Length: 110
Image 1 (cartoon, rainbow, N blue to C red):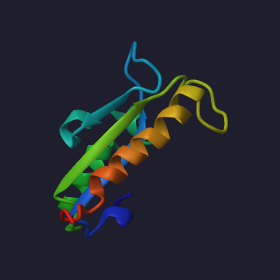
Image 2 (tube, rainbow, N blue to C red):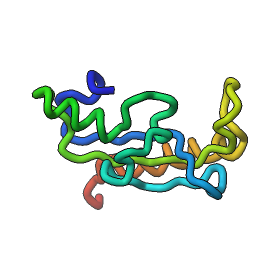
Image 3 (tube, rainbow, N blue to C red):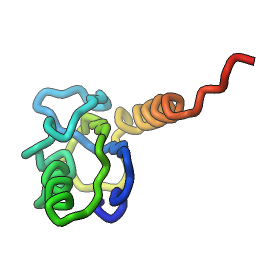
Image 4 (tube, one colour):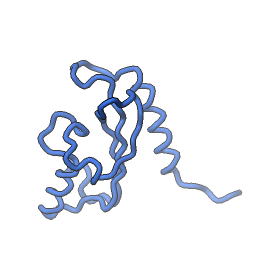
């Protein structure tokens, strides 16, 4: 992740999220502060997303000044299988489209 983001001005990160009682497929917009200490956001890794940014910056790596983080509530994080749950699979293209539309340059009125 650090290698992918090094030198970028802004990052948009989409990942699985597990919130007790959360509805599968629900999207939450988060900040690095929100995910500090939340190891489940990045899966079964030992380093959280916020820790990775902090480690990189402390190591002299130029990381994005701003980051948008979108967590999609998972349906079942205890089973290991290929593919996404139907709820998450239905959410991904909607979120991707919303991000793409927001980032697309606006042309002046013709």
